[in-house]
Length: 209
Image (tube, rainbow, N blue to C red; front, side, top):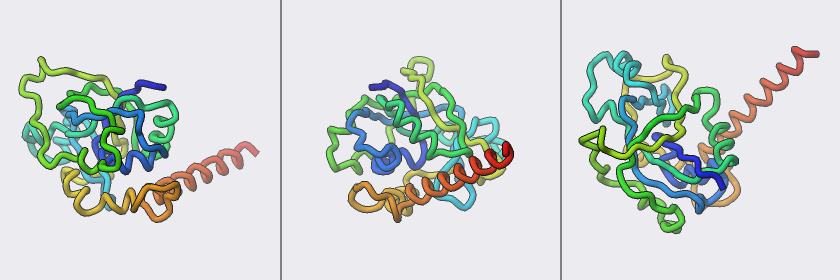
């Protein structure tokens, strides 16, 4: 089993959505809250989900200096992702994102996802832990994350996970977990990406013919 770390900062912070995407119950994973410094998280235009970009781009997009909290992205650090998990995540993120290694600061202890049983909602903190004050002395973990690659498709508005959970999360993971993603946003996005991949393959094969 792999020991890959990943930092999730958007829809995949919700454990039920992560389970949908990797197509298993995540019992092999451990999680903790974490922060990525000197990056910003913006709403993707006309979508529920965000894009992560370096602060130098975020400052340009917002057209102002940002506070330490605004230029620190809170997310979830996940340990133990397998190669299959990562392939499913890469496909789900699609061409809008580039996977890249970053250094993140854990904001709490790692806890096995399986310890929460069906009560995965309790993983979502109502009060986020404070950011590390002395960054130089706080622990650092190298993790994979997904940087947004279409800068012009981002709003200046900073994306809020709390607002997403309140207004939109349920439609992404659906009702009780089963093997059918039909009717969820995860299923819709996967079908859309599969259609795009099939079209790209057809055009590539046609060009070679």
